[in-house]
Image (cartoon, rainbow, N blue to C red; front, side):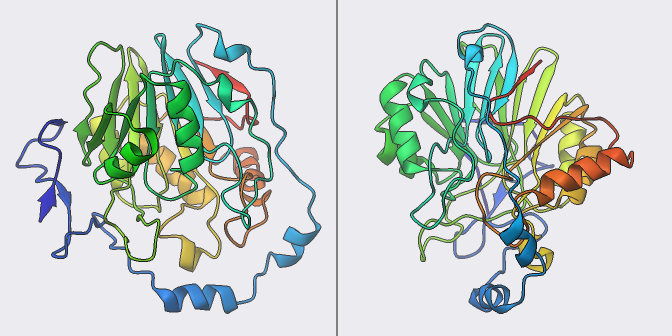
Length: 331
């Protein structure tokens, strides 16, 4: 069984792609690795010893947000990491915000690095992209605040997420796509596509995988930006490179990956992120999804330090960019 949005263009032919796969029960599923983590796995993880526990308790490493916001009023093409998986992108005058999360996730999950600007300054956005329904990517208070300040913004997301976004924003400018579909961005210089990732979705106990997860391509002229969303390692990196052989910047998660036996199907490790980056054939690697929230067993500094080590060893075929939150990467 397969599903897509008939109102949007599918970039593969019908013989190549029937649509996003769904199970007999109508739930979305990964292309290669069905999500099969259950309560027993969660309990095993929680009850197992954490080899990084002492390091986590002792370390003082923190990201250092840059709080100057000149990029907001600039016309320069740029990428600005805002912490975790939140990004501001400007291409050819069009502005994009991805997976906005401004504050704590809950009273239990606090931010370890402050959001680098007053969220109320994020106005006149053209597009707000939401990769999937997990609360560290689709944050209700943040999206409601953005909707108030950006009444004309267009929201782009995966199939099934449109209901939540309509509830949060009251907007009619919402598009949901299946994998390998192109959003309608008419009257804009941008092309934006929704692509596969290896992950899953849920906000409550009874809504597992009823909403799709995925990656984005944002393209204009000779600049092509890949945003991985949450993903484990799988063949979609090679798939993407065949369709988009000219990726200039690849934004890939590197955190919340330990223990790998449990997290590996959902969150890619730093070393596998490098492998995926090489398979994409991209020129610049921008890591994300680390240092902001404590979501797994590794210390906050672990992904950052691992990437630095891999760079020093010459294991990255391309340019590694490790900006601080709020730091501008000019394109």
